[in-house]
Image 1 (cartoon, rainbow over the protein chains, first blue to last red):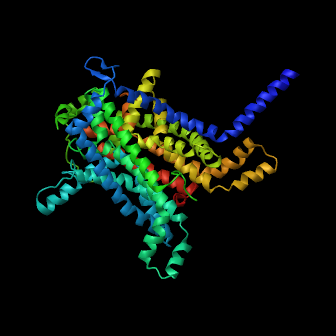
Image 2 (cartoon, rainbow over the protein chains, first blue to last red):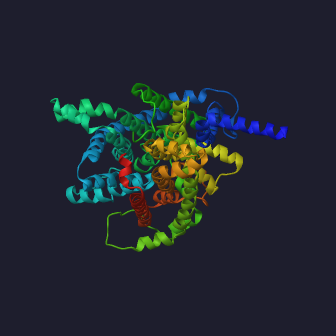
Length: 299
Length: 256
C-alpha cells in the first residue's frame, strides 16, 4: 500500500517535472537529430587540429599547421573570397528582385496573377539543385540554346558555362524562390491600413514603400537574408556543374581535399573556417536586426 | 592555382559503376549536341528502362519516404514546444536548430559519415533518409511553426476546460489544427528529399546511390538526353506535389 503510494508520488513527481519542461521535451527529438550531426561536426573539427600523414591520413598530434595553410594558400583564400563575394552579390540581387516581387504578389487584387506569381516561385522551389544546374548547362552551354542562338546571330557560339555568370545565374535561380517565399508572409502581416494612413497624410507611393512598408518587413527580409546567404555560401553542385572546376567554391575545394587528395585534416580546417565565418555573419545579422524569431511566420 | 592541377577532377568517372563505363565505350555516345533535333519520346523510354534510373529512383523514394516519416513528428513537436511553451533558451535553441542551414552540406555529409562509419550505417538507405531529414529540418520547422502561430490557443483551452486531458487535446484538437502546416511541410520534405544531392553523395555507395547522384554521374561522364528525360520527371513530380498542396491546403498558405 505504502509502496504503491510511494511510486504514485514518484510518478507524480515525474509528471510535474515533465510538465514544467514540456517545451524542452517536445523540442528534444529535433535537438537530438541535429545533435547527431553536431557530434560528427565536433569530431570533424577535432581532426582539423591533427597532423596529416600520408599513410595513416591523420595522426592525433595537436597542430595548427592546417589552419596556417588555409590562410596562406592562395587558391584556398581566393576560393573563400570568391564564395563570399558571389554569395553577397546573389543575396543583394535576390532582395532587390524578391522584395518587390513578394510585395506585388501579396498585394495584387487579381487572384489569377497572384496564383501565377506564386506558382512561378513554388515550382523552382520544389526542384532540386542538380536538375536546375543541369537545365542551365543545357540553356547556357555552347551546344545548347544560347550557343545555337548566338551561332545563328553572330556565327560564333557563345557559352556561359564555366564562367562566374553561369554560377551566379544558377545561384540566383536557387535562392530567389526561397527569398520570395520567406518574405511573402511578412508582407501579408503588414496591415494595409498603415499604408492608407501614410497616403492619407500625403506620402507618395514611393515614400510609403520605403518609410512605412520596408521597416515592417525587416524581420522577414533578415530571415530570408540569413537563409539564402547560408545556403548560397555553402553551395556545392552549382559551382561544380556550372563553374566546371574553374570557379570552385569553398565546399568544392574542401570536397576535393578530403575525397580526392584524402587530406582530412586540411579539408577539415577549411570546413571549420567556413562554418565559423558563416556563423559569425548569421550572428551579426541577428544582432543588428534584433530579431529573436526566425521561424515565425503568419503573425 | 596549384591545387586545381593537383586535383583535376575525375571523381565522377571513378564513381560510376563499371558496367556503365563499358556501355559508354561500346556505344561511343556523343557527349555533345544538346540543341533540339526533332521530337521524340525515345529518351524517356531509355531513361525509364535503364538500371541507373530505376535503382536510383527506388532508393530515392525509400529515403525520401523515411525522411518524411521522421520529419513530421519531430518538426511538429519541436515548433509546438518552441512557440507554445516558455523556454528560456529559445533563441539559443533556434540558432542551434538552424545549424543544418549554416553548416555547409559537404561538412554535414562528412560529419554524418564519421558517425555512420562508427555504427555501420554507410550506404544504408534508411541512414540516408535520416540524413535527409536532418539537413532539411529547418524547412519543416518553418512550415509547422507558421501553423502553430496561426492556431488559436483558445481552442486548446476550451478543450481542456471541458475536461479533456493534455494528450487527448493534443491528438484531437492540436494536430487537426496544425494539419495544413504538417501537410505542406511533409510534402516539402518529401520532394526536397527526392532531390537532395550533396549529402547523399557522401553517405551512399554505388549500390545505394539515389537518383540525383546517378544523374550527376551521367552528366559528368557524357551528356545524353536520357538525363534530360529524368530531369523532366523531376519537374513533373514538383508539379504534382504543388497540385496536391493546392488541393489540400491551398498554395496561398505560403503567403501567410
